Image 1 (cartoon, rainbow, N blue to C red):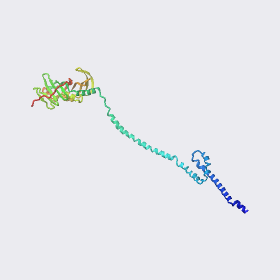
Image 2: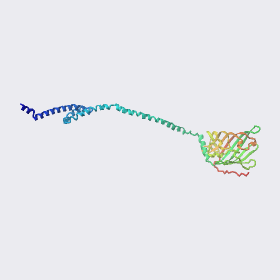
Image 3: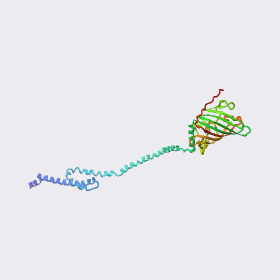
Image 4: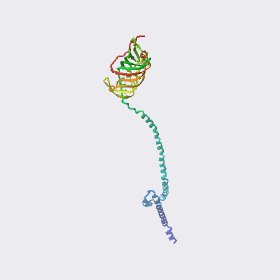
Length: 348
């Protein structure tokens, strides 16, 4: 009996088979545990579809030898589940809040409205360049200044009437004066001046060159160099200087014909002081300008002058103080050459 029992149970063959059974049972338990554990990690990896679980169930058989190593892998897989929790939308919300800080650049971009100040500065110059359109009268005067400045010679005729009270008796005297001659640009004139009185006429020759005025002595007829400022006669040659026109604030009166030439008559504030020798108070004046050539054909004005300032022998005939002067100047023979030279003055 004892030999049979040892032959059945104590033989190496039976011990080997027992170990195989134990190993097979352990292997079966390990496979069952592996399948039970593998169901948990396989579902989170392909996020929504649980269909992957049946596909991975047959694979544990070849990996039965590696059963110890896969078991820690599922334990590590639960950590990804907190990882999604660590990536909640608050963190992107904080990141999106960073762009909200870009509102400060928007505030910085609002600084450019300060550039409105240069815009205001640039708008200031735009006010000045708005030129006022010239009137027709101003255009004519501008044309006449240019046309007269292009002349070299012309003829002039001045008719003046002095109205003054006599030095004695207080009666009113009318003294007509004529001054006729030629002008050469820029400042030379030569003419004869005549004072017509009721009983006699006083005549003298006048030449003006470069500011020097030469006159003949009314008694002897000899040429003399007049002291500076002692004689004041109008110098029409200064119309060729191209300076200011004889009128300001002019308006058109109408159209007339002078010596067969169509002329435009203008009226405005007189500026006859440019003619030198007519230093007085001339309020208004009329000027006739050629409609086609822009030349001045006539100037008419009236004002108050000082008789002593003229340097003429008017006090000798009882005229002194201020007098009303009516002045009419006519111009013709444009650019007809003349020769005007200083006269021979005898040595004193």
